[in-house]
Image 1: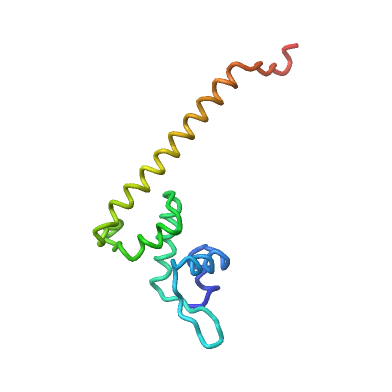
Image 2 (image 1 turned 135 degrees about the vertical axis):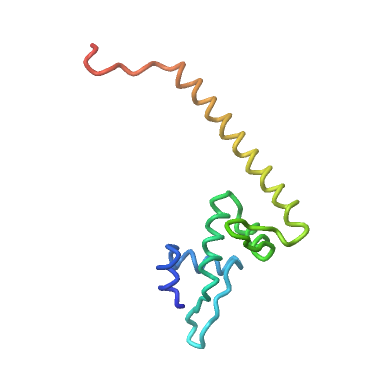
Length: 124
């Protein structure tokens, strides 16, 4: 399928599809004219990329993950021995980022609560 059909089927823009290709996440066939031709399985690959990005993984990490997982129903199952250890590191990185964000929110809550409270309309 050509890029327009891929956009329609995945909801991902042409620009993002080209970016995924630049990052080594997709490898569509190229016609002599230069047009990209995507395989049916690329639709699922794009969905998988989107899910992994939403999980907080970088495109570098996703490039390592994609060839090392297979689908079993709704689950992705690792098939490369070192993948799980690397993903544990990514999980720890994401957990630290969450902890940092929670600490920032707690600090903002303290400042907000200590500040002057807004006056309700009509109470003057």
